[in-house]
Amino acid sequence: MQLVDTHVHINFQDFQNDLTLVRDRWLANGITKLVHSCVTPDEFEQIQAIADQFPEVSFAVGLHPLDKQLNNSGWQPEIGDRIKELAISDQRVVAIGETGLDFFKSDSKEAQIAAFKSQLRTARALNLPVIIHSREAAIATREVLQSVNQEAPAQPIRGVMHCWAGNPEETQWFIDLGMYISFSGVVTFKNAHDLHESAKIVPSDRLLVETDCPFLAPVPKRGKRNEPAYVLHVAEGVAKLRGEELSSLAAQTTDNAYKLFNL
Image (cartoon, rainbow, N blue to C red; front, side, top):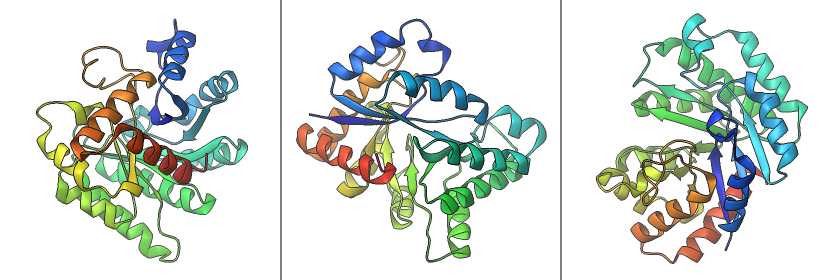
């Protein structure tokens, strides 16, 4: 059985002392590919170095909506230019992101929307998917995607709603927009009732799993540092909610990840 962890941050300091052991554990659990997300273009060389060390790692480049560059000075178009240049510079770049909107912790809505639109346009120009972060911003995220899609109806944005936590109505919005839906350890939490219902309605060919490590470790590892090996527990949780065999769900989500990210 194989799995793909479609969203990791193993460049974070949490993994500084034992990344080789962490890798041993993800290989032991059948995780054969990882997609490393990017918080800021300043991380690019660090993420490249990890991919040099571990060839199963592909990666993205982008600017997170809560990054200090965005919140301190607003959206700077030169950041967008840099993201595009870096994406072109390495064939292991498989996505733009993570980008998106986060209205839970920030009031820089206009800057976030400008940054999001810029990165969506870059993804379309380079024929890459986007990794979308959306927290307390589902309506605005949908509106931005619809707006950017209207600019080029023949080239709708492709991508994934990562670490998805929306209710079934919101989930259907993004399914209708052609997005993949990726579930993290949150889907294993006992009280995440709306998310449990969302996990049941995603078409099998749009379903992905991730850890978003080092955050949000799934049950039975909740409260610990998350790591790629634990995407197995996410897959187990989603399979149980959907009434599917783990092996079937693993095969389907792996196939989906390969298709979306062209792995």
